[in-house]
Length: 525
Image (cartoon, rainbow, N blue to C red; front, top):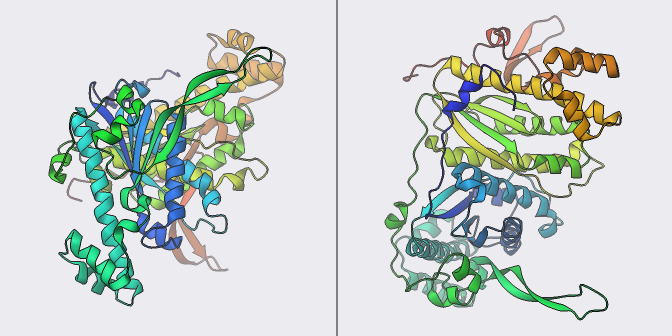
């Protein structure tokens, strides 16, 4: 890690550990998925392919993360339950929720063609997530019962609604007919008017989908001259059950009892107000600059597998920049972003009320949208490279109280860019010249800026200052005015556009030229 006078800004980061013995549940929900489903012409009230896509993504999440034991989902939501003793990323809430939602989103985009081979994705999908702390198995049981009850009630209502609309009613008329109806009345509407027995509808629609790990026998041939060996292997399966919070269901799958625990009794009449007690979340301090910083997860491996150029792959950096541009265009409260390598920092204006300043929703929505755009834009920047596995990013939200401190934060990131890029340039030039990685590290140990510059110049005839500015300065993304001129130079129109530049953001010059980016606002403005 690079050291600089600006590193004090790290002291504003707050730990958000989910304390043991709380059980960790990560719930993800689609962002504006009603609109997404309309644009992409999903079947109403349920699109089986869309639900199978959600289930496939959840299955891949369980296969990737051994600590996730169970997942339950319906419509555009999924809840992931971690084993009781998990130390996944040391139980830091922001890290956990952002990694899961990022990976799920990347999978959703990557797998789209598998489920919709004849349909192009017409808009960018994204999800938001939160961590729900369950202090006991009884609370987890109540949570699962609550979500499955929501699945049933929403599906029953939507089935009635869309059958009425398809029969010629307007959406307003359909809502009015269903207003105040009970469960039995809705069943009667379906049966009497449309000949539909609700209980005969597919289980996936009525009950949701449960993804879990179970143990199965697997026969392996280890040596040709020895008999096969039978071992128990964990396998991820999808099941549908009328009551996933019942003791019967839980006891049918030993892995659930082993990695979580059992239920002592069945639960009934779960009230939403009771569950809301476990979903309370603090808001980020008002009238402070909010930075949502995202970092690639295991990006060293990702870059190796995909053959990125070392020390810098310009196409990979441009892909990151294009994703950042899309984020600024989607979230209008973001006034500036700075990125280098596999990280990006997004700065929201001081008076933002995005998601009521709830950190989990702000972090997850931005991380998810960035991940989605990254996968969607891959072919534009790597037309001849297949995306071999989806990337994922983690994120965090940090408050900075003043203009001076937010400037120091950005300076810290650019200083890191300078130091790390110079080191990596020297390192990879040494490796490409025949040195081992260990020898290259040894040669660079303790060297200062000037010594590295001399090494590049003397050994490789490289003047560091002539390297592409995107490598040395990183990338700044912000809204700027574009002018439309007539042939004689008269301004006819001006409009705002997101631009990518590579300025020095440590010194004052850039900020004096663009004073409106970080303009100070009074609490009442």
